[in-house]
Amino acid sequence: MDDAPVSDWASFFGDLARGSHTARPDDPVEWRIHDKTHLEFAIDYALRAKQHTWEAYFFVPESFRIHEATYSKKAIYDDLQSYVRYAVPEVPFHELSSKARGAHLRRLHDILGTVQEASARDEDRALAMRALRFFACLVRASGLAAVREVEASAAARPLDPAALKHLTGSFLVSCGAVIAAIRPILDEARSTTASLSDDIRRVVDLADEEISLAIETLCADIAVKLEADPEVDAALPDLAERVAKYAVLEARYRARKQYDSVGSATATKREIEHFEFRRHVLKRFTSSVLWLSLEVREGVAKWVTYSVYALAAMLAMLAAILAGVRASNVSDNFFRYAVIVVLAYAVKDRLKAFLQEAFSKFVSKRYADRLWTIRDRERRRDVGSVRERAGFVPFRRLPAPVLDLRRITLEHALEEHARPERVIWHRKDVALVAPGPEGTPLDSPMLTEIFRLNIGHWLSHTDDPRRRIVFADPKDASVYSAMAPRVYNINVIYRLAGPGSDGEWHRIRVVVSRKGIIRIEPVANGKLEERSRD
Image 1 (cartoon, rainbow, N blue to C red):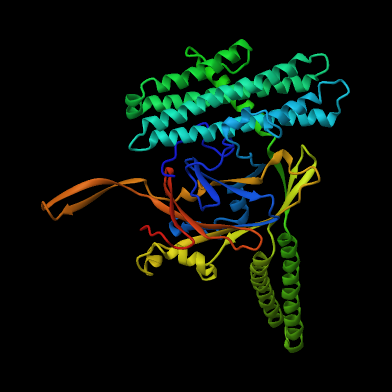
Image 2: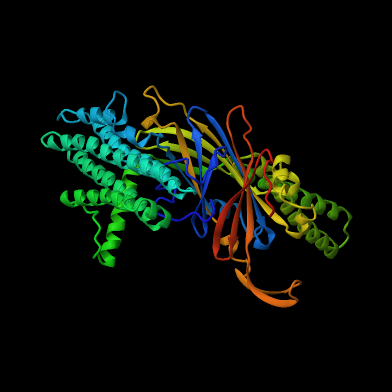
């Protein structure tokens, strides 16, 4: 998780594979650095379980000047954006070339066969276009998972050349097998030009282009990394070249098909810009088969708050009227009466504000701020509903396991006073809808919610990231100066609970400076087994 490289596959939006090197085996959440000011994390909600609860506490240094007066609930929700999609099933890359009954390729072939007649139903055509896009997603996800195995083997020390050669060879064989299996099916679909609709024929071409481009990108990426590693290049000097040849074959294939996504060493800046735009469009088009829409509306808390505010105004006005009536009975001149009325109005105004604040805190603890409906627009069905709450929490109200997990890295209780923190709390209660008689769409085992947290506002009051310090060395009796980095720690403690289970608390530490996020560090798990000094 340290200094994770930002690449084409670094974002959860483009990376459909799961179980990357950024996740610990016992951790239900994957964390990544999307860019310098955005922290990205993904949560899986298993469809077989109907209830899920996500809860997180963000311990923010008080020097950030983030508190209730400067950081409203609206600002919290503006900075914490989320997206939901179906997760891609985990399928070994080589199995995508299988034509056995029930295999994804066999099912794609059968679905395309149902739309090659002029009398095909609109529902079947829509299903065929979804199946084509979904298979392209499978190639990207499964291919990336295979590449990660190769990368892990190449990074292992001491290097095992035989194991690396075997994994790389298996990956290349799988690439060739998948291509050899899918292209005859796509060519067969194209050959039925008399009956195949223009929409399906267009999707066939786009899926073919995306599959080719994905395999080229994976091969080119791993080839560059293998060649850049001196130890790998010395042990297996021709390995990177073998992988690069597969990337070249795919580029030549798209050139022959006259697809609009072929790179060139002599390309101008404008042509490279167009090439990247085309890659992005293809990736978004095929991935859109997985995406779900979120319909957000104000939660019960808003209307309850309005109601209790009205009640507060009524009570305050009643107090003012009673004071005025009492004053009229005992006052013997206008000026004394006016003074008492003014004082009664002032008390009424402050009483109203006090009651509003008290009622607001009461409501925020018990009612949802926002209600969500998760909707699958392509299949015209609701997938689930969400109740969301967020806000600041004082230390005295933190759950005991959360407080214990935060304090495990402190040497002494006084450190909490030396480094005071504010705590932002976020919770989502997710209720999923049972799949219909046709089963789970796309055979997906779960939904994936992807969060992007913008911490740019949090860093605006931090110190200069580097400052010069001076110190004396007792050994050589000399004075020295050095540039010291100024960093801050944002601790996050979180859990994902399911039905019948409270879930285990986990903790990470996000190290930041004024320039942005530096790294993510796992600190300890809910059993408090590890110890890492802050």
